[in-house]
Amino acid sequence: MGTPEFALPSLNMLVEEGYEIAAVVTQPDKPKGRGNKLCCPPVKEYADKKGLLVLQPEKVKTQDFINQIRNLEPDLLVTAAYGKILPADLLDIPRYGCINVHASLLPKYRGAAPINWAIINGETQTGITTMQTDAGMDTGDILLKSEIEISRDITAGELEEQLAELGAETLKNTLLKIKEGNLHRTPQQDSEASYAPMLRKELGLINWGKTSGEIHNLVRGTNPWPGAYTFYKGRRIKIWKT
Image (cartoon, rainbow, N blue to C red; front, side, top):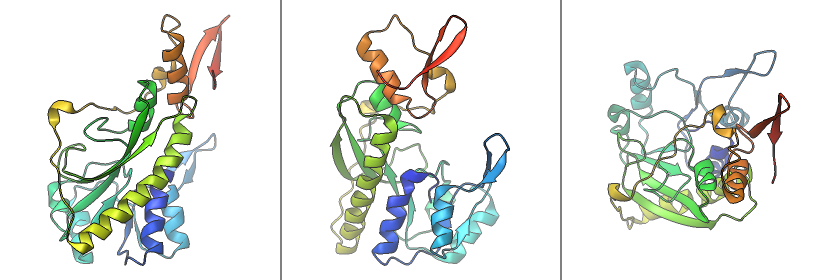
């Protein structure tokens, strides 16, 4: 279960490692660009090429969709940037539950935009956490963690590419440990949690009262979206690099 480019290395790893993929679940096609042409998510595009069954439910909490997954009799659900919170009825279906590939070192940066916020906040390290999904938002037990440095000039888009590959590698190791029967679960410490809410366009507006370092981090953390910007002589100017 995944939607954007971030999920592709994990899905490709499952294919390359010979796992039997009962279905690929992704978000519905959405209109894009000036012509509002319907475009399919990257995960659907990949799955179609591989001849995999693709499901695109509008809602994951309907009994019809839950029954559809139940009929597939999966051993495991894997999620990577799917974009919806899964109900307990769905999580209870697979024998091994659901494993999520999350782009932060949990419990820091739970939520929708962990890569962006780590850069905006000036972090020098982040990583991937595989976790046992529960009904909360990224609150489940930690399975494995892999760390990566955040270089001074890297953008959110560039860091996402690195973390996508690291995510696939960490998921691969997590599944190997499940098969070997030696995977240990570590409960998250809620007192250490922080959050990475969904990005809004207004976030990119530069406040010139901030330090040069904070502005530099905002520009990097909002590249490629929503993009940092300012106004000069009545014109809106986008800033891509500082």
